[in-house]
Structure formats: structure tokens, C-alpha cells
Image (cartoon, rainbow, N blue to C red):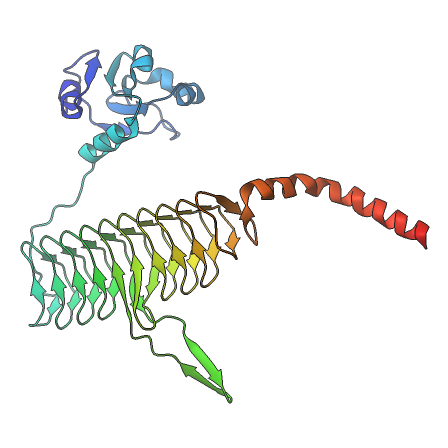
Length: 339
């Protein structure tokens, strides 16, 4: 792609040679020499100063104040520059192309309803009364149990299992080996017998949701475990039964939600964090990595620690820790003097 053509697609101006061929987009953070035929995203002075290799960049996607640093540049607005970067990455992404075919090696129940231009690959299993929306893509070895609904343009990668009666919305991307709708962890011990509590609810997932590999979302005991629109899971996220996860939520890897947790809109849960059962994270709150929330959060407040406390409070606690040995020593002396 020529530099001038890429600039035109972005609605941006450029400096340097418009006929220069751009073969891809690369990252300065990699330990490889700068590629003179690739474009590099440099949109801040701090980033420019951090990477010595930036002086070798021949083609930059950058902002007006930095454009003079490069022999060839596509100039994008500073505000929202990351959106332009995403557009460029999308243009160079080599996505697999689907021919909207139904594999003869797939097992599809005659009662299943398939929309227009659906792709179903080898060894997928589609059980009775499943509904699959237009242009959905079902990879090999996916299992959709009875009465499952899959929205249009949703993509299920290899090994995904969606249990009976669960519903997924439009344009979702579910990565490999994620399980949606397994039984919640419900048991009751009485008189030496352990009873399993039937999990007769389901899972309802909204639109534009992405779940990483090896995630698990348990079905509700009686009603629905719900995941809101535009919510994104990293790999290895677990959502317990009866949870309510809102819209525009981020959940990073290896995070666990116990049963009946409510995560309101716009929350962020960092890696390896956990939320105890029946708690609510209020809108816009943040749970930092390796933290365990044991009480409801406040809106737009960051928490960390085990048990998690508001970040400002935890910073004060942590700043006091180095003083504890001396305080303990002084306390011990006073106790001896008193005795």
C-alpha cells in the first residue's frame, strides 16, 4: 500500500514521498532492527524519547508536533490517535476468509435454524432447536447444545462449548475452549448426604462481547447469569452462577467472580483479582491486580490488597509498614519497663 493511499483512507495528511510502499505495521518495542518498509506508531514525545530506535524510523504514524522527526509521516490528530492506529492495524490484519460453507463433517440436527451465509466447520456439533444468526462462524469442534441461540456475525473459535438454553448476542468473539453455561457450584450438605442443587437457569451474553481462551461462565441456579454489551474478558476468567456483569466492563486474566456478584457498567478488574459472593462493584470502580474484594465498592474508586481497601487508604497503610519493626521494638521495651 502506498503512503498516500493509506493517508487518504485515514482522512489524514502526509509528509515525504506519497508513492512510498508500506508493507506492514511494526512495534518499536521489539528487539529487531527498524524495518524501512513498515510504518511505526509514535504519538507522544515520551514514547519517542524512550525508544532510541525511533530515530531510525523511515515511516511514522504520528501527530503534527512530531512529524518533523521522520522523513515520511502520516499525520493524525493527537486526540483519538489510538483510533487511527487501530484502523491501520485492521488494514494490515490478515484475517482468515470464510466461504460461508457448511462442512459435511459437521453434525447438525435437522431442527436447527441457520441464518444466511453461516459458516460451520468440520466436526462442529449443533444439537436440536439451535438458532444461528446470519454470517456467524462456527469453528471445528464447537458444541452447541439444545435450544442455544447465537447472534449474527458471532464467531466461536475451536473447542467452544455452549450449554443448553444459553443465548449469545451479535458480533461476539469467543476464543478457544471457553465454556458457557456449565453448572454453577451449588451443593447442600444435610444429615451426611451431599445434595447437588439443580442449576436450571442459563447464561445470556449481550452484543460485541469478547471472551478469551479457557474462560468459564456458569449458568444461573434459577434465572440467568448475564454479561453486558461491549464487555471484554481476557483468558482464564471465571464467572460464577447468578452473576450480573454490566456493559463496557474489562476483566483481565485469571480473575474470578464468585456466585451472585454484580459488576456494574464500566468497571475494570485487573489480573488475578477476585470478588467474593453476593458483592457489588459499583459503576466505574477498579479492582487492581492480585486483590480480593470482600465488601461492596464505591463508584469510580480504585481498590487493592487482600482484603481490598480503597487505594488511597492502602497507600497510607503500605507507607507505614517500614516503621513497624521499630514500633514493635519500642512497644516491647515499654512492656518490660512496666513490668
